[in-house]
Length: 289
Image (cartoon, helix red, strand yellow):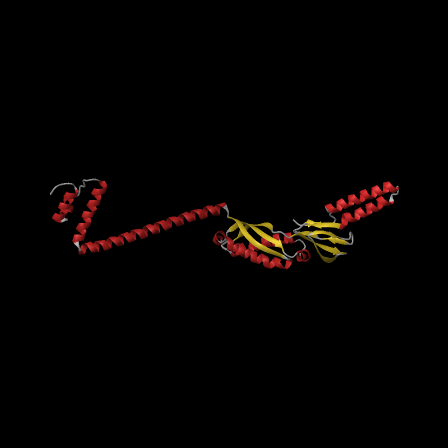
């Protein structure tokens, strides 16, 4: 988070204040005059508010009588108390903002609740301090507005199946808005898309009905292909009765091989095969001609 450092005291300032106060007290005890402790206390108080420390990942703006002087940090620096003040310390690490849009209508008028995560960082601390009052709140509000606008431009199916595309679109929209503030949006991730329970049940039933319809269509296509094959086979057998006899013999052979050594068939079926069919059937059944 951004630290408000106006009037905040650094650890080094506290240490210097104690050192100056102790030194003044020791000198006063030695010379038996209060001027030393007064001077030590005054110097310690000055250093207490004058010495500031900025951490490695932070920047801070110095204002002299309200006018911008420049950025300081990271490290140790000095200001003139009362005359110079500090802005909020700006954290320049990658930060995360969680945004959500509740009961927002999609392009096909479906109410959804969407949660997203925005990864952003301050690349120009000077602009972020001088151009916008509270850039953290501005990022959050801008992300929520952009998320709602993006939801309204997409249908529910797109939001569920194309989250990465939607995230890149949101990143582009936010980056164009925040770049003048010295802030860049690195990525946006759509974390969750939720729909009302009643609509979820209806969509589940719709999907089940669609799968059943597809199954019936596939079954019908298979029946059509089988019937076409039977028509072609019938035409071929009509022109060549010997092929029909051979097919019948093959069917008998397969039945005997898989089911056992005895197959009972109508006598008319054997007669239609001719003598050769009868002999073949007897031989397959283990009889001698």
